[in-house]
Length: 360
View 1: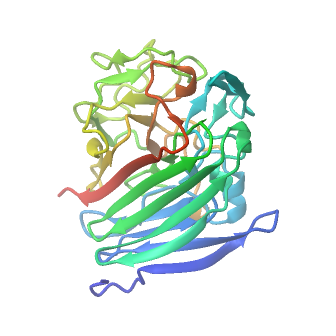
View 2 (view 1 turned 60 degrees about the vertical axis):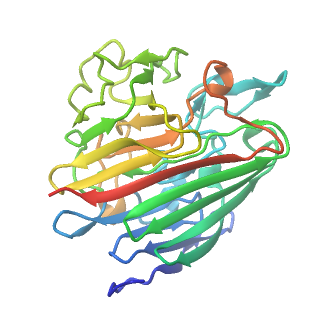
């Protein structure tokens, strides 16, 4: 399978021990062309993604840290699996089947990314696998009823697959014994020039999204679904991320993007291309496919709070961006949004694919 590559396709090494005594491993996946992905058993955190540029030089294109302590202290969710509910739930509460559930806010009055005890803090069981044209791992975790304030015991299975075509697949599935909201995503950040190569404002972005969700000053959707025409949210034609980001448009109550886009319709249960991200200097192009109805664009406005990243290199504001495929924020409190409620005897299923290639 390796076709002359010196990298073993699967490797596991110790990474550290949490303050409560849990051993954390780092798993390495490598394909035939030399692409490499490393992730932790803690939070499924992807710590590095090494992909070639147009000259064949492999560079790590996702920010992160060198130590477990830094990941435990991280407030940016670098590379983490997010759940039970990705993004925000307004007021840290929701009503389901006549019962009000009170969660523990961690973003002002709101719940963000599952809260302090979200899936990014869980220790996942990891089962690696190797197939003809891919390597990967199955990550499993059981979230008990009441964890984070959510109802129902949720059994989650997430499969990371690295193919020889330089594709990184994320397949999510879950079942529950009681009705519960669920919204899973992978919080990878990217700077396609290199994880500490400056800002991403000149990255060229295309989003196949004709509508977006406006937000209030707490980054909670207002409930409206508006067209992107004539707004800073129109990425239907490729343009630089920074082109209108500081336009002070009334639709941008925050200094940058932290908004959900309503992806143009695809066939039910099938992936479709929803985004392209291109970095002209390196020639790297990231193409994203998903089954999800939404994509959160976060332009890294809060990055730079930590004094250092990998190899001791500091990250700067807008030093990377996240393109998170998911359902809409605050859906449990917005009946007009697509439902995120999983019920017993039903299965949650979702797929996202990151495809890396180069342009001459």
